[in-house]
Length: 57
Image (cartoon, rainbow, N blue to C red; front, side, top):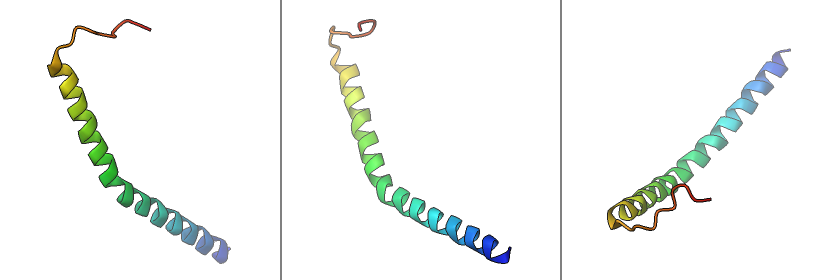
């Protein structure tokens, strides 16, 4: 029973380490893409084009 508990704890620890490394690696890419998308939306809002696709399918 003790080995099962130790195995589960080690498995959870490994999973958290992998997920943490992925988040740490992908966070800057996510922030850069969010800023670029926000600037794109700001440009589209300020440009004032009358070609609105709201309501079209």
